[in-house]
Length: 288
Image (cartoon, rainbow, N blue to C red; front, side, top):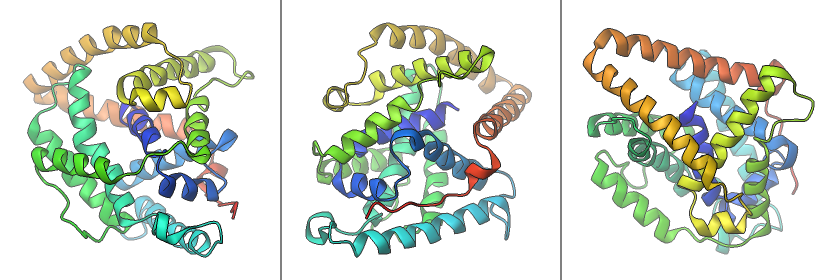
């Protein structure tokens, strides 16, 4: 679950790129009340393609990946043909560069940041994540116009160059997307009991992640709550536990196997608990 929330959080800074923000806003599914469900659908995609047997022919991951590839084609066609889309300024919607940027943040970015939270992530494990994300980009249609990095050093260099060529603006669409994502973790008023407590805790964790992983300029632009207290609480409560847990994982193969099964089950249950069957069908509502 940490990986899901982390991946969502680090996307916020990318929303300031007009190529990304205007494409996402065009679908009508990434802002306001729909933001959380769209985030969950992305989590479901990651879950299904990484499940054992998920990418076998007609497996759940295979079907989800096929559906998303088809939807991306429809979105590109609708957005690219719109009078509101400036090809010279914005290029191609859901471009090859965009397909590369997110996995780069999700592999070396997440791998290195986990160390700040007490995880004892090794270089080999980060490079294993690189391999996984290279596969995910292939599924999503990345054609390797430049070679996908394999080492940590190459990955960090790629992230640096991607940040240099990404134009960040104060575009209204990007601001609305970021604020919608942040607001989506606020517990609905109609929740009660333990469910509300869990959503409240997730909201505070999200605030802590924003403070730790989103640049100050973007946080100021989006009016992110300046909650240093919750960030400190999260760090002090999370880092020691994960350090001990990861130390045990490295010392005991049997514990590592049990931990992997438990984390996999928690991740699966979290996504399924939040999503109903009707939510698993993505129906774009074009704003163009």
